[in-house]
View 1: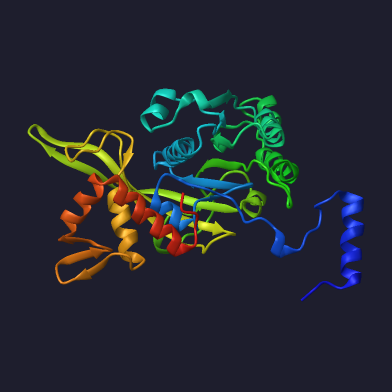
View 2: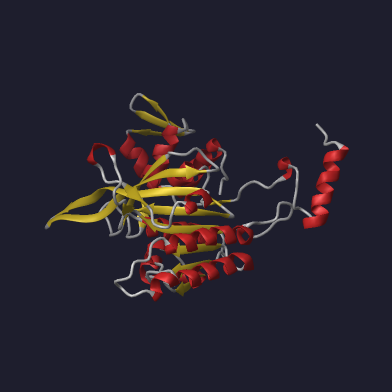
Length: 347
């Protein structure tokens, strides 16, 4: 249905006052850009990858795999785009050797080491405004110290100073992160790592631990996506001298998503040490993810003891998974079919 003259006049007035492209017809707006995570299961859970030009939170307990998820995301986007540059705010230091193990080209990561909250937020806003980087990462929020708190002695209490500064950051950063509604602009991936804390005086059913995340509640409204990370089990292998721990299973759940269904779950097998089955340190078991997603979306069909995908056939899931690990073309084909099935970008 065409717009009325009155509606067009309204749009023209707003665009004249605030600049061209300030108001557009919704059907003409560009789609939300997506950034791959390096994991097909996580891409599917997020509806096609991390949403761009928005702020996303990754939170969980210590050593659950939060920073690993971010590093693998950066590595995946560097592989896709040879000019992909990341601005990394390291409030807890940056281990470039571990990042390299996870596949990151550290020559395309610029690191700003600070735990001063106001400085970190100010530079993140300027980096977003500059259009000079493709990703901004804060690792991590709990390590930041607000100036009010830093000025106090150890025996002086400072309540909610960080939450107040964080709320102000999200109110100010929106304009810097926003991109044109009518022109093609360099999209931005924005990730903030946070860590659960026990909620004092809170209540949880069945004797569980009530959890909260530092930074106040205002930030939860600002995030486009919030993903909880947890470790469900260790991956141990038997060796001649005994059992060796080589990896962990990382479980992810969307606590909030404004561009895909919430409360989705993904499970990743991650190896932090070399495995006897062929995985190197820093790798996901991508083949098992492909098989799971292929079956889930009806692309791989079970016929008796045979698994069928297109013109491929395997007897037993072990043979299918082994073939998937060895054939890169097969991996790419199935991955593209899965993303097409959920309506995401093929790359």
